[in-house]
Length: 177
View 1 (cartoon, rainbow, N blue to C red):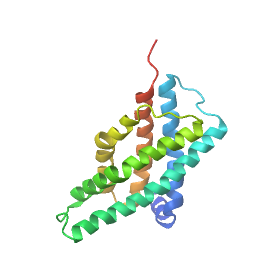
View 2: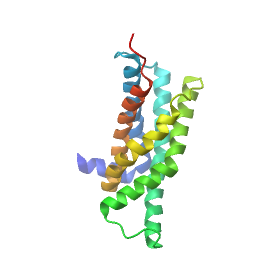
View 3: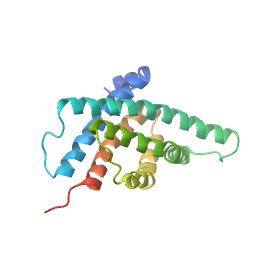
């Protein structure tokens, strides 16, 4: 089964990223809605659910390119002696820091913009918390992600999107009566 997964993600890197994020990212949105509403129910209609899956698939393409690009960015900095030689963990941390501090703010904004388009409203509340999560959650989380072999990185990143749903749910939950 693991061999099939590795073959799938290496043969179809963009498609596999889109599918993994469409499923897991949308599941994270469902969990967020459950937390916000304080109950487990049908959180979205069919059309909104499909739109959210498409949103996550689009974000997945950007994330996949960023992962490849920022790994190359860090490697080039090492080659040009702008960073020291890095071991596996320090390389993973460097890629995570570069990715989250340079690409992360764009992704937070893009994610919120797409959420607003789907909801047909303008909601920028707590966007500052989304930016702060880059520091306290995403840099450590993606340090683990980039320590893994490449075929597993997007899969773990998609799993982290479930964690994002939980985080966003708690940020936006309704106060208890």
